[in-house]
Image 1: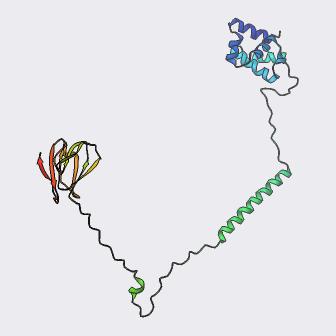
Image 2: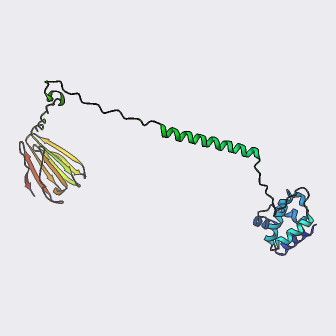
Image 3: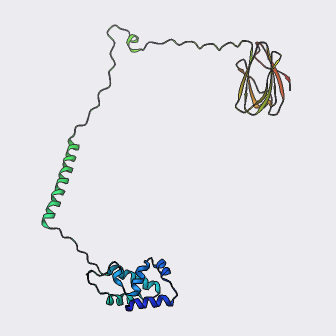
Length: 252
């Protein structure tokens, strides 16, 4: 068993640390920790990895990493890898005359293309927009209105509003409102209109309506809007006869 392995193993055992605990803390596989403690370094894939494992393992056990690593290098000298872990050399490639010539050629081509593009943009002719279409002049002796003024299309008069046969009442709810409707003496509807709902009632001679909340509806009689019939919560009964243009309130 190597000297470094004895130091690592004895230190771990003195601290009461198992190999499983050391593996979880250092992230080094258990078989490599055993190889370090047993001195079987050939089981570790390369001297570079072994040096890193020794340094991390020693630091975890509270030992001096530099001292333990120096002893490990004495026990496991470099044979197949001539490079040191701490020291690396960087060789800066040098540009030869041939490479400089190629780079200068590429740069010259780029500059030539840039110059051609600049010259083309400078000497390119500016497109001239076509002239606006001219208005034909009237022939001599022709009145100006015959050629310059468009024909006037006569406007059709608005169609008269459709005539309502009998009596028609439209109720539009702006809030929830119960209504009861009788048309020509017969009960026609009883229910609650929700806000936004609208109903139209038509009769031959007379329509009688009771509102549970007069301020929550808008009423139209034969196409003509009627003034408010009351406030919200007011119970109002009204009726309208054939040919009338205004509601008649019966009970309020």
